Amino acid sequence: MTYQETTNWLFNQLPMYQLQGASAYKKDLTNTLLLAKHLNNPEKNLKCIHVAGTNGKGSTSHLLASVYQEAGYTVGLYTSPHLKDFRERIKVNGIEISEEFVVDFVNKNKLFFEENDLSFFEMSVGLAFEYFVKEKTDINIIEVGMGGRLDSTNIITPLISVITNIGLDHTQFLGTTLKAIAFEKAGIIKTEIPIIIGEYTTETKPVFIKKAKETNSEIFFASDLIDETYPSELMGNYQIANKKTALQTIKLLQDQYLVKEKTIKIGFLNVIKNTGLLGRWQQLNENPKVICDTAHNSHGLKIVLNQIKKEKFNDLHIVLGVVNDKDLDTILPLFPKKAIYYFCKPNIPRGLDANILKQKAEEYQLIGNLYNSVSNAYEDAIKNASKNDFVYIGGSTFVVAEIV
Image (cartoon, rainbow, N blue to C red; front, top):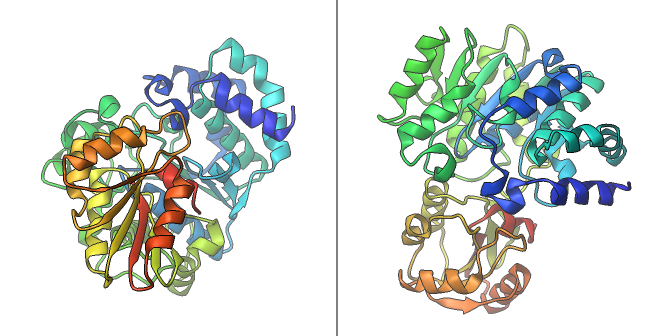
């Protein structure tokens, strides 16, 4: 198969959460462990930092990868979802896995995948671990896909576990309270492996402390321990917490991975250049100012929309699209009524019909027009905006993916 045929097969033959949603979620690690054994347990030959959290896990993972790259280490980075190309998920020193490796891996193991009904994410994790072993990485930053306890990445025994924060997202799988979601994410805490918590609340802190006691793991609350951070290419206000989390992680691993302060500063400043991270308070234009951001749940959107309030502009234009499992009653009230809306549907099967979004938005006095594509909505927003206006594109990772 060609690379295109291979990725089409990966996406279409088996459940893929990015496209199908709920049907792709598996409730145990049996298949992942089976695959790991089939691949001769590559995860046992990797040194990893395991990163979970409702928001910020992608940014934190990329900050860590950038710093360790600047320090001269060979760094594996596994993240999800991808915006444009599947290979974005698996990188070594910022360079995506080759098309050839992806094709060979699938061809070599296709029969096993089919016989054992492996999911898209399970196969992706196996591919990443095998690739990192081949590339002889010094350290690997492994981002959890969803949750933690039952996530396919949770077969690793990391050097350190990181949980960035807890918010309400994927509640149909992880639970409907912060306490329940914290329990799922705390599932990455391993026996006698240190755990770093980026942000906590009165509801989530006891969950983390209890789990850390059970596993005899030293626990560190980055927001209490790190006072100052350094400037970064990542501009969103929410990055302050992510930078603190990354700094506490680097500090804890200094005995194994020595990184000078000067190197940390360079790593933070060059994070986009080093890793290719996109869609985090990313500016696409100056006059009018155009910002896109992948925030897609109430926890993330609240921070981003508060940041927009601090901007100076005449009129606000919002290009908005979401996926069909989003609880609109938790996110739409956060959006400003004084804005012009451009409702659209991200071009994936999970995308919510823009007409449904528009009707629901009108209940919250969010008024605007309907568009048949993200690009049409974006083009119209740019056309209508004067140079002193502000254009925001968001609501879903997959809306941003069509613009960047």
